[in-house]
Amino acid sequence: MNLTTAEITTNSAEQTEQIAEQIGKRLRGGEVIELISDLGGGKTTFVRGLARGIGSPDHVSSPTFKISNVYKADRLELDHFDFYRLNEAGVVADELAEIIGQPNVVAVIEWGEIVHDILPEERITITFKLGGETARKLTISSPDKISYLLEGIC
Ligand SMILES: Nc1ncnc2c1ncn2[C@@H]1O[C@H](COP(=O)(O)OP(=O)(O)OP(=O)(O)O)[C@@H](O)[C@H]1O
Ligand SMILES: [Mg+2]
Image (cartoon, rainbow, N blue to C red):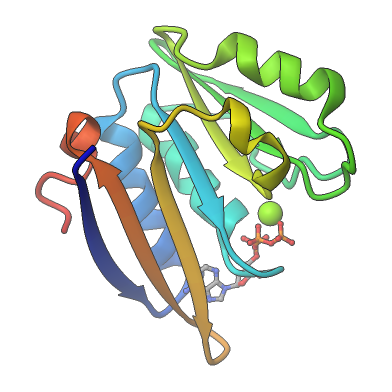
């Protein structure tokens, strides 16, 4: 599988949200996005932009305690998972496996190591590296099949 990799540096949370919003506008449904960083890297901030991009008015917050949140828009639904507090993926992994690839659902995952075996190979991976207080380097890796998400952005 051929992967295209792009790097973007943002200098504020707003800028990270804006990049995510542009990607969110290009979502068609069925995509899987994995977000990787240390604590406070900007993953949930990015999800806030994605939700805005699909046109969801729903409030985005860290699903750490509930494990997953759903943000609904007219044509798409964004399912947001955070496995940080789980030692075993259990039923939440079953839930994730069930929604992956559904035509109107986009899955976005934080701390997804424990569900790597159920994530499709064809997923976008975004790694956030902290550089000072407000700089973040985003490395976006996308299979060609879903490179439309990055068209005109990077
Ligand atoms: N360039 C930036 N991009 C994103 N967030 C930034 C940036 N600069 C500062 N921030 C701040 O960093 C914090 C990122 O928090 P966020 O909850 O998005 O991270 P996270 O990766 O989801 O953390 P966790 O692993 O705990 O879930 C926020 O307080 C945000 O305002
Ligand atoms: Mg988070």
